[in-house]
Image (cartoon, rainbow, N blue to C red; front, top):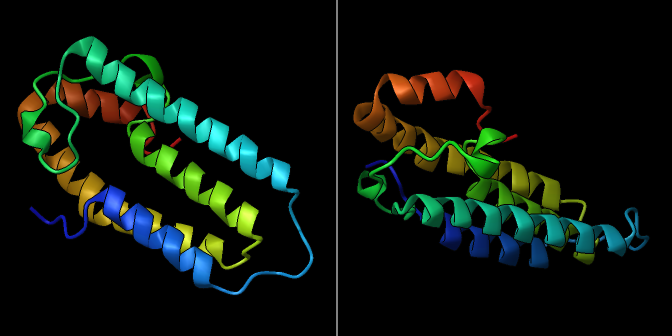
Length: 145
């Protein structure tokens, strides 16, 4: 598999990097938006995990072959990758709280890495496991949002 760093570890490393990058002296986005993004992150993350529990299938990012059912209900009707989207929203909240204008670069790098080394390999496995059902799903639902 092409996965180099699991998304949760990459998330932690990205959050640490944002913390140590320069911060603006004037707040360009009110901190309240950080709370909003954190709330959205929690909602999206919980909804995505709930969908897997409801369908009684595995959701480990380390081994997508454990998935025994294609989950397309709930939040998965809006995004094919809501778990990763929730991590992006949490990084956005963190960047806003820290007033880090460089956070956007870290978040873009996080999204690129997760797409290249997690989502693309994951989706290859899902095409092999679920065939046309998954390719039809890919055409109907966007990767991120």
